[in-house]
Image (cartoon, rainbow, N blue to C red; front, side, top):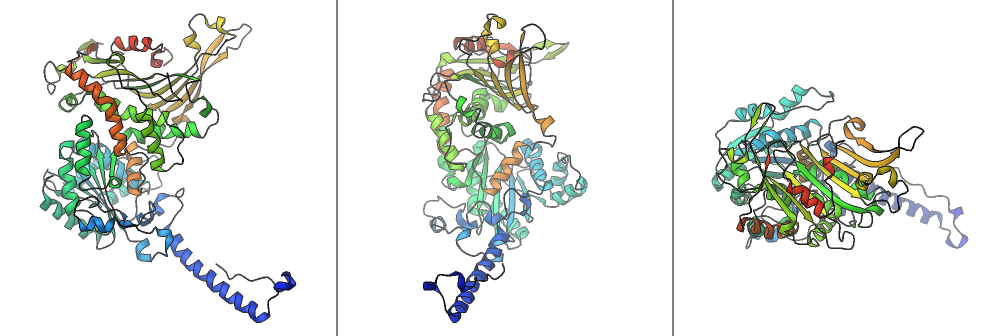
Length: 594
């Protein structure tokens, strides 16, 4: 910053004229101050980069507005002196000049626990490579796989190289990028409950980190029954001593309120809430992220987002395949726990929440919790459960759920469920929120459908006949496949007569945005690295969600409610249509135009 020249004293009033000596003294002092600010600013600015620039310029020290040692994995451990020390308030980076050593040279060490499993191979490692390929990761990072399987570094690299893919753009040679990424991947074999094995992992991490400041991220791609063992060992033996430590936990987060609360209590013996990132990958979907943008940044929608204009809201999830060998896991949870209690309920909370104070993670999560706590208890008569059975179609035989050898014979676990939910607040009073989720259905889709009320005194009702439901405006957010947002409207067909038609105002993402849409795991992994918690589930959110579904689940299981059978590849049980009709709703995914 150049020295500032003070204008000539003639511009001051006569009562404030300075003698030349005073002016020169003032100029010299002023420039000295500005020079000091300039040097501090230059150093600070070299650390802080605008978020809208390429993220490869950001430094982990400055990623989330807190110093590296603001959170240690020992936070919350009773009697831990380290926990007490770390609990003291820490100044933020902007409050004092930063040294070069604080600004650069921080390592990021990512440990994928359960590295030999399908989730790690198919989702986590490819997502990490995609972030690296797009230059989102910091310069100094390593990836460690950890599992019980005996494996060398080269065997791990060979395993994950089979699932890595490159982006469409060709600015970098794909093979070179893969080789560079794989060279940063290492493996350590150990037991999940062995502190000694995690201590060995810590030694290897320190060796790769080279004595620099280090931040550590653990991704638990393992069954929930060993979450606590791993967290305990990682916290006590492999946490960062001079940076942050964060843990990503995959669902399911328990089976009911009691088991979920116990899991949270055990995790918090070794981690602070701020260190726990409960991941629901559906919250990382592009259309789910766009939901709040669509509502809060478009004047045309926000005034309509209430009971006065919206007739019903539908959240639909369907898969066109069955359990296919995963029946042992699925049978212990069922479709309500696996999809409705987390994926669909989280989307509902985002859809229905009031305008948050800001885009800060805590402000958004506060509003989601308010929605969940305002929801009416789910009644058994407002729920339909089903289970797919074997079916022959097109000369091919499709097995039923209980035909899966991993599923217990005579199992009553539902593979389909539909439910009507209500939010008892001023905005949504009386509006049914219908959820529908199922396996082995006729199509694969996930979407949010908003059906608006009929036009009062519609001048053109004669042109539509007696079925006024066909004239209802409908907003559809198709989460997958082929992401899209479209609005169904009524319009006149060109010609001399007065013939009306229902058409779509369509935003098809692949047509409007030809660039490949990042996978949800990429977005969520990057958010966890940067300390952005907006799309992760807080413990009180989890409690409120389980409080809503636990009584229903216990009633279904205690009464041994038999699921209605439906053929593999069909639209699901007939009972789902009766449930919708009971609330004066027609499922929006049944139209022939779909």
